[in-house]
Image 1 (cartoon, rainbow, N blue to C red):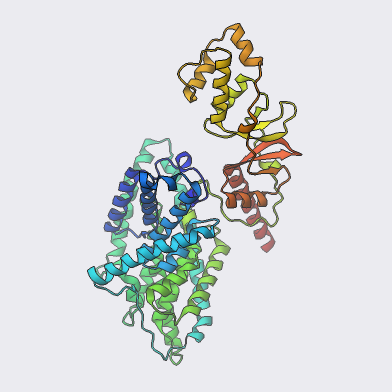
Image 2 (cartoon, helix red, strand yellow):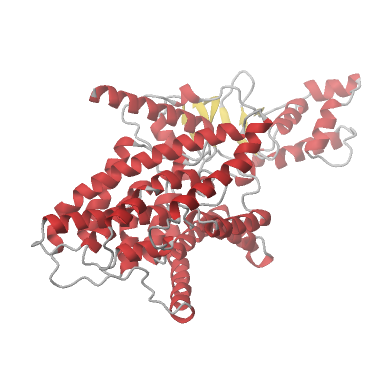
Length: 544
């Protein structure tokens, strides 16, 4: 969804992402994954499911006006992400903020109201369901803190827990990145045996290992959704079980979420943090018995910190407060979460979501403090264009190379002063009028296949003379102004920001007004990643 919300065409980069067959596969996959006991969350799958439903609804005639507006369509998809996360976490406020932090590299405030309206509707449905059908309290992990507790004392005591969970989340992210790279390479292997093993035998081994480690005969089984509630209650006393529940997912979670199955990380990381936070709180209570410390409070702090550090989202603190229906420990939760995020970022640059994917065309938010890369360094110099007075052959070649795209217009071959752009449809009309005026045979309409036929057929000498050397003038009304172009000396940081804010997929580069190249999304992504890697190496060298 981060790729789609940056304005990238999903039909080009993510074919089938919004199809009904994907909806069925995703829904069945998340049901079977949870039924098999895999250590996975659900927020990722629900976000995808809601985006598919939104896309399919927009295809209905009733919503056709909304589908025709790309900006409105993206706003509704952003709202769908907020609805999905809010429903998964039963947290309308935190869910909206979480969806913004995870799916958006640049967020428009105009999306905000739609997201909260959708999340409110989802919250009402969740509350009605939990109170009438399931007959449980709408607050999932409701905690009653005694009035004798002193939350201010817990702020400095929560900092070490945040540091530890930040380090643990960095280790988790590095394991996920390693397994994701390995499995991606195995799936692309030229060996049939390797592809069969990674497709069938690998998931079987993960399921068996998960079952062996999860269903221990020495301890009563507690389902993953009930584990946070267990560790946030006053009755949880077994430190050994909490240690197991806190550290075993460090192995099982990366193994599960790097499989080709619908996954999420919200619940597993929440369980890890709650278990280890409970251990930390129990140790503090034993060491400082007169300080009125509550172990269950540290379970809540740990849950927010571990999930926040893994996903790089501060909104997990809001989710923890909403799901526990208590603001008593708001300051310790936020302090520990922020410390955990910064600690994790110091040792792993990606979030756990980014670590599971490879080569998706979205622009990450990066630091360009010492980067001097310019548009001239990353541009593609070979640009398809037409002149103000083009030949018919040059128009046909441009239409063949860039079907359905706007094509830049320059003054002439020698003087490539950029005048604007012209749509493929307008160029097709120019070709059709020229063929009619010259009494030339075109065939059945002008389309991509017909253009290839027109270029491939054997021409007579007179027709060759007309098409190759005779020129026509583009209608002035058809040449439109470019929305934006950049100078060859524009810094990569500025180009990166323009692509984020304006949701561009390409931008033409000029030198004193003359067209010299084009910068694409992939070029900006590759240059940004190279710059990020260089900055990390430079920082490590300075630290040494």
